[in-house]
Image 1: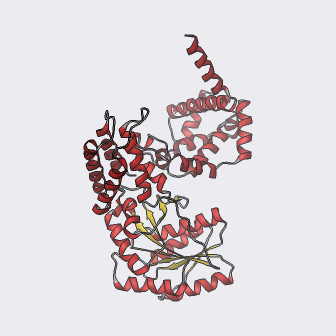
Image 2 (image 1 turned 90 degrees about the vertical axis):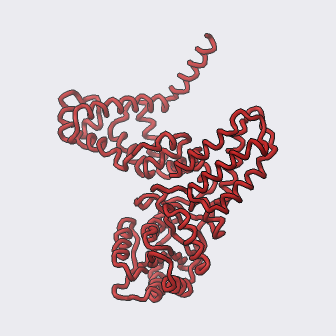
Length: 445
């Protein structure tokens, strides 16, 4: 995500290397490169120009402290302005009314139906809402079937009316049904078109007037760049939506939509979505996105994801096992499952400062742990509980049973032993003691 833009912005900051102060002369070339990088990322030209003018105004004449280089100072200014351009702070979703009605709109192929499922999952799991999904796309049978499948995955009921071609009536009936069944949240998935047309706009406007949603969210494919911004403007002029959702951020997105859309339509970005998994939805935080665009990672989001999977009691038991050197393959596979629950591996790694650039051309498949899981699954319960009994003969059997090679099994055994040693050292405080010893040794020298 945003790799090309990140690279170009980093190159532009290097122009200021060695300068003692940011001046109009030495900042001109940097701003020119920043503007070019933004336009190449499909940011609206007027937005890019206004942005660089604001950066210039804030940067000119600033004294560069001894400990801070001009390039670093400019990076900080650009980061703050980028965050402000994208909204400044996160905007929460409104859940007002009984039931609270959320209307989903957008073009065909933007990811509305998948987002509807993801939002239902998020509201159910994190906010404790009783959610009803409504299949309001009466023109595409596949959309109704897709919503049913998603509803089954996340344990949320999907309201449909087979044969009814009136989406306004379906939405009204769904709300009445929600009240009857004590659902406090209704998410209405609507039909999209390949392009904005009058019939589509009239239909979505009629649905909004009938159901009076507390939130109308416009879903846009981030890979469409500036086209996404133009479409959002047309929708907002007619629909006056409450917020924007950016989907497919795991694709080859140049970042233009994320950066431009707030200033063009003056509506907040509320969610960002990547991948097909139902938990791959995040609240949009402008400051964190600015950090990621500038290659600084997003440690806060990474920690939040980890905390969601954190079980205090399980962690206490694991620490006790580590100290006693009883960490086994059952614990190992549990740790892998926790990592997998956090989301796409490349996306997680890119949240670590500096890792995004290192992994730019590296493909990390979603099934990266598949071989490891196959090998561990081929072990007997006794072998998983006591890895030390796995001798050469057992390793050969495990390799055949998992469809891997003996070299693969040996490699995993070595990785497991290294992981066990490191985790034991951390749990027992040995790592801190080792560092203190090294520091004392360095002082004696």
